[in-house]
Image (cartoon, rainbow, N blue to C red; front, side):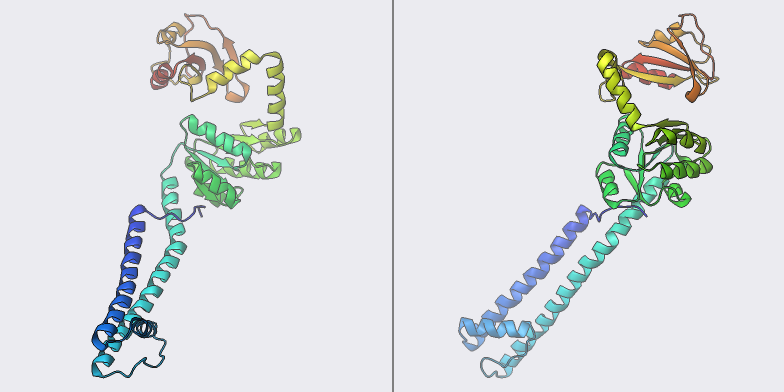
Length: 343
């Protein structure tokens, strides 16, 4: 079940406003016409005419203000019918409002689930606390779609308000991960603040999608090894990362600032990218000089899997690229986009 708040479409809201406006106009018209009718037909004073109209429309049933002849009985009967219509109209509008409030959330949930079912190559994010919200923001800035899974309704409301797809449920359950499209996902990040839950999420996700990239949050140093054994490709400890960053800022602030600027997706001036060399694609067998001819700087060539890669820094211009390697490059957004298209 997705976690969404009821959302009414503008067309539906306009229809309801018109409906209520017509009903209010009918009520007011009935009171005015009834009062004027008693005054004009029978010569009653305004107070008596208004009082008789109100007790008739509300079907209270008090005695007549003045004895009624046949015309008066007909006029009062017509007002009584209008009163019954007003009562049923009020009940109908109230019921319509209640039913729409109950069903609109379900309708919106089905709509969002249909959108999630159409996703492929997205990221599943488990846990939307402070760490998870930061992860989601960075993924979106990198052009990725994110489906947030969380047990806490308030967290999912924040995620939905931030523009993400959301799924309410326990991320350790296979059914919930399937609902988030984990079998079609590019990767999964579990950022729950409990190590045991992160381990269970990784175990379930790895079984459902063996080839998917999985990143796990380790809240303690001891948990990092357990997360890797459960199937995580990479583990991150927010506390270790924070300590490392503080130390780097103390001794190498310029380097940290440079990397921050290069990894900031909002700055098109320059950026860093890792591009895989795929067999048979245009970059396979090309030289470093060929790549750098298009306003690109090749910083390093990586060999081996991502977790244990070996880097050849500052490669020579005549160094040929081989399928299975990756190149770490720098350039502006336009040049990097052209390089990704070639790769």
